[in-house]
Amino acid sequence: MAGPASVALGLWLAAGSAPVVDATEVVKDLVVDMKYATPDNFLKQKVYPDGARCLMLPETAERLKKAADTLRPQGYRLKVYDCYRPIAVQWQMWKIFPKPGYVANPKKGGNHNRGAAVDLTLVTLDGAEVEMPTPFDSFEKAAHHGYKGGTEASRKHREILRAAMEGVGFKKNAMEWWHYDLPGATKLPVLDVPFTKPEETSK
Image 1 (cartoon, rainbow, N blue to C red):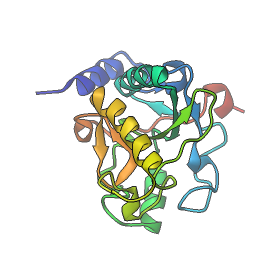
Image 2 (tube, rainbow, N blue to C red):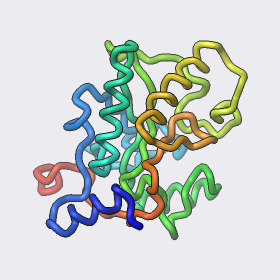
Image 3 (cartoon, one colour):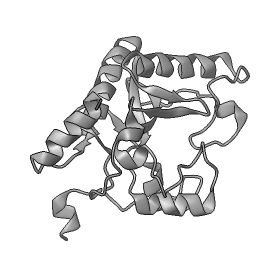
């Protein structure tokens, strides 16, 4: 039986609509720091174009909004590092770091390629960074959700983020405190949509 996400995606595609939305149009105070549009990532190179947006399936964005709504009264906003990812970029990542569990095999595609995954962290209401167990894209045990080391503040922030995301139905990645998936994501198709706005791609 098809889940809500696959049914909604089918309706969008049947109507000829773009299957993804810009998350900033749904979560109005979302902070966007697309790491792969800069060299500040584990690849050490820029692999996204200028103007790359945080795109995701409508259901992913709606759940993200609900998570943001629960965090705001606690004094936090959400900051995203990665959202939808083209399959071509997935191949680049796999070539550099072919380790399942950290990088999805592009032959099958990962949930980022489906618009059904998001990498994110917490910031304060004024946008200041908060301490987390590791930086983004850290491939060490300290990045695991079960890690009991580090500072009390880093563990507290990790748990606040986890509670908000799981509270609206996202599934955590056990090895990456920043990565969350839409339930049933693996059953959705890999997408191929432009990152930038139409007027930017035509220039």
